[in-house]
Length: 79
Image 1 (cartoon, one colour):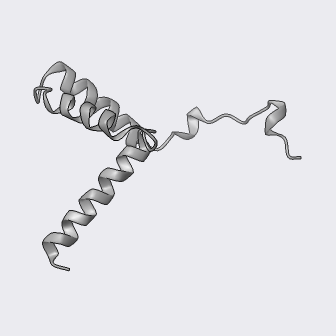
Image 2 (spheres, one colour):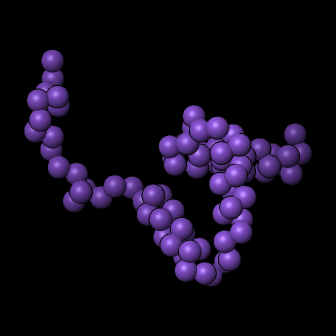
Image 3 (cartoon, helix red, strand yellow):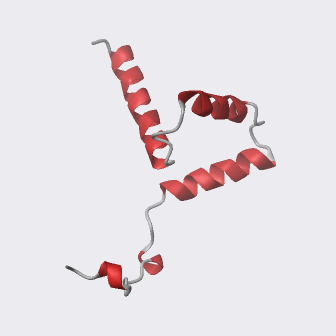
């Protein structure tokens, strides 16, 4: 496998991970492609572009320990 093909395979793998992280693993392919085509129309540097980048950056951050609280409901108990 050439270095170029290896890099291309890695990029596809990473993009697949983004689809999973977004919760779209089972989404229709036409839906995904349509959404990506719409995203491609967003002007870099625009307010919408910045908003979407901020949302993506937030999604990549690991949850902070401050936001985690112990579960106290009945379903959280060991059975």
